[in-house]
Length: 176
Image 1 (spheres, rainbow, N blue to C red):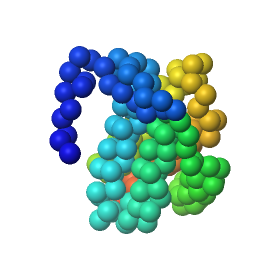
Image 2: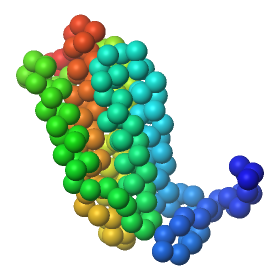
Image 3: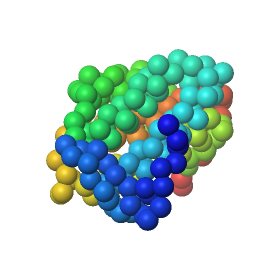
């Protein structure tokens, strides 16, 4: 199979819903797909830092997150296998990581250790994907779990960044 089909050379592409649909590449659906894809690639970059003990301990969940991001894309087109247990798993990881951290009393700037900074990049892309999905909700019946998952995912990535900085003893920069 060739990677190039030339069918997108005119600025349109096709998505597979209950029927094949051709859309302009700047359609809201494709904007959301693009944000999900970018998030997935950034999570993959985060996983590549598996020498970090915090990432190593979270690799299974991070890989599941990548698969679940595809499920959100499927839900936008037709249906998805994403369910409440995926949401509960993320919440459990948030609670476990947060229990190891000092209480957060200020806003903090993204950054610190490079791996923590990458987790923050993932968080911001997750927030964009969430905004793009919200833009679709008036025209596309996307299951509520998809929006809930992206919202919780950004929380997880924020706490993960804090846990990485904590592991490497990098002080958080507070917004004053």
